[in-house]
Image (spheres, one colour):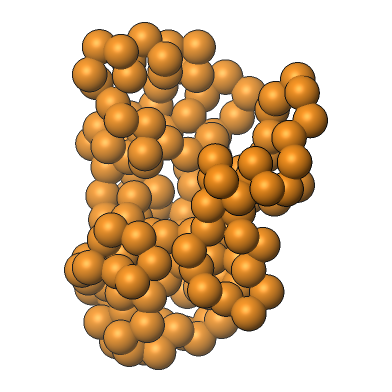
Length: 153
């Protein structure tokens, strides 16, 4: 049985007003559609700092998978790595068999940018202020309910 998601040619990558490049709908994407897998190399989280120092990654496209592993979309990834964050997302990430897939949580019209809430958490041992969160992890999504930060807490 083939478990690889079929490329149904829903998306394209181009410049984004949110940040850098973004993923946009080439045609209307119905609510509930599995768009594609967030692909990339599975890496041990404990090795990420060394990988950064060794020039193997920029850490920009790393998605948390579990307590031990992350997926680095910069290494062997697909266009899903260019999906930008939004505090009012039109997509979500669902995991099946330890594989993250991007799903539309609403109908996405042709030409609209795909986005999901990165839900970054603060693992710091010290409390950081809301001002620090906005300075260190700024959000540029422009949603009416924007938190001003990629952190969810």
